[in-house]
Length: 398
Image 1 (cartoon, one colour):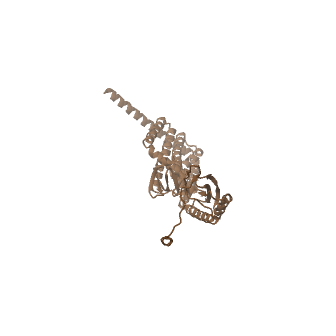
Image 2: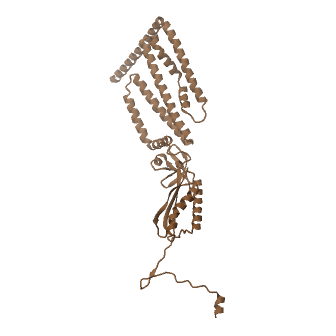
Image 3: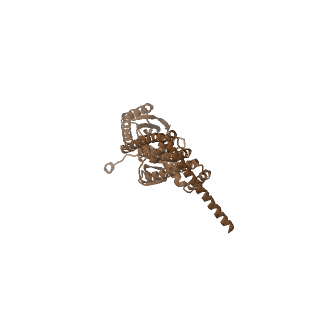
């Protein structure tokens, strides 16, 4: 019981000493300020006038930033983002900037000067955090608008990003302020680090997909409306959300895949094609004379170029089981598959017309089995076809 009473008494004594020290500092600041006002009144008036002009100038700059935001139309540009950041300038920061700039001229007392320095540091640190937040979020919004990303999920993602950015920046600002006050922030920084690690481990799946969504926004492997293919899936991007991307497959169903899992795959973006290549394998009958075989690649080139395409290859490939195999490949600029399919159809029809006129045969896959006579000669597998005789002819012959 005696120990508890001693602890309480010691605590009370410490509190009283702290209160007395604070009162003494306040009294000293007041006395020094009164003496300073009496001896430096002219410098103080001049400093107040200069500070007022600085405050008005900073208010004009802030008003300019507000007007820049109001007059902006369409996707936000860097000017609008800068104006939005300037418009977030606080009155406390403006006043403290003016006070800091003129304090040296007015030669204030040491304690008053330290107070102005501390308040200016406090205002500057948190104002810098506000500006940084607006610039970072403005850059993200600018990218999402310019790349045509929309949807409630993306708005939720931006809301979460705003929360995370705000928390991170103001946590850093708080640490800087406490460090300027002489507080040992090592434990605080360690605590924030451990807390951040714990939160990251608890929600690592969500954060992984969130950062994957940010990677999609900034790296732009695809965007909404693009036709992509990965694994065995082909479809059109319908929405890029906070955790997943929705893809409308060409067969009609909607496929949903986590952002991180999607970025881990090889993605083929068909919408970013600069040309479409069509390949047509063609088989030519072995009975075709060699001189005609020699002229066929030139025929194919003429047909393809007449359809407005560029020939990439028109040459023989191999001796097949039933034909001499030829490969025709041609390119069409752009990524319009409707045009490519229509061009391919025209080329195929023209090839058939040209081959019919030149009596060039594209054979069916065939296989013939021969038997051998005792003397080694090959026997055709089908008997000679007998002429068809009608019933009337048979009766007349009888």
